[in-house]
Length: 180
Image 1 (cartoon, rainbow, N blue to C red):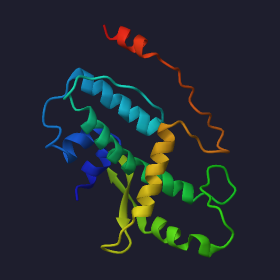
Image 2: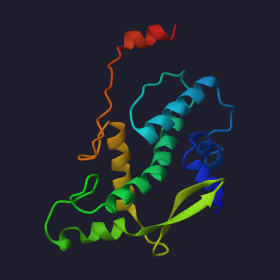
Image 3: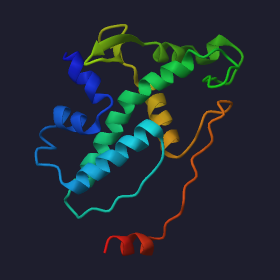
């Protein structure tokens, strides 16, 4: 495994596409692609939504599907950080129920990977490794996917003081008019 490549790909969506999906993204990027890539990075790393209109066959679906995979890499660290916050503190991830047995299987999945701090190119990033070789960790990945979706919809953590981003409604006619 190339730790430097992985570290760069965690924060650079274009690099992620080029390095891990070269068969899909083998053509040169257009200026429109680069704008969409910048908006995807902003939505994943800072939250929010955006709309894009590109010609048929320009790679919209491929970019969106790959963006989902890229977002999962970033948000795994976020979910683990929330799990480390003590119960009742702002930003904690809490589960319903009073007995440990209620969530034993979920807890085993959520702790099935551990984080290793890796340094490369002047940055420190999290690298995730399975505790048991060959073990599956689908529930953690699903929870991470939920965090990604919640962020894209503008959800924020209760008690952190962060306010949801206000979204302005744009009419389709206005969007079409701005492209002419």
